[in-house]
Length: 166
Image (cartoon, rainbow, N blue to C red; front, side, top):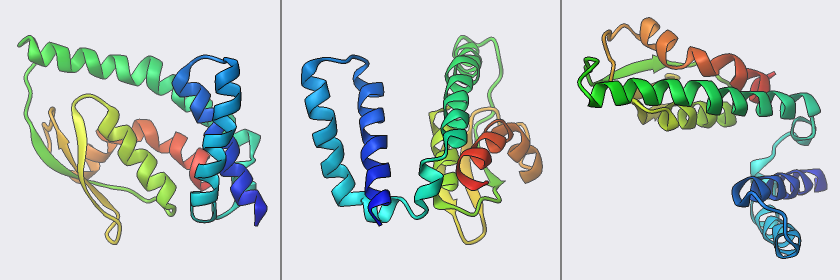
């Protein structure tokens, strides 16, 4: 039971230092305190299987995914949207249905977050019962859910499954 709280506490400290991007004496004191409060409030609900939270393999996949996303996916999509704004590329905005096959809420939320953070797409609704996202897509050249799935979430799918599902 305590492992759930420790996992949230350690993740909170890690995220704190990622956000502030510095290490000072103040931060070394404040980060554990803030993270402890968050762990006490959310620890019992956020982590269902603590052994997953402590898996080094999952953390490495998470780091690799973060680097891949920030260094490759984001800049590529920013350039596409910029070329649309400048009139160099056509855009066809529409809301498309994209199916998913995740079992955990973490994977569903992480993928929705990745889609929304990617320029040109935003998740406007999630239907967890039917396992579908509804995505506003600036380049909706198709309404075929299989093609939309391939274009929108295939880039995230393998990473999210390794981090949250396996």
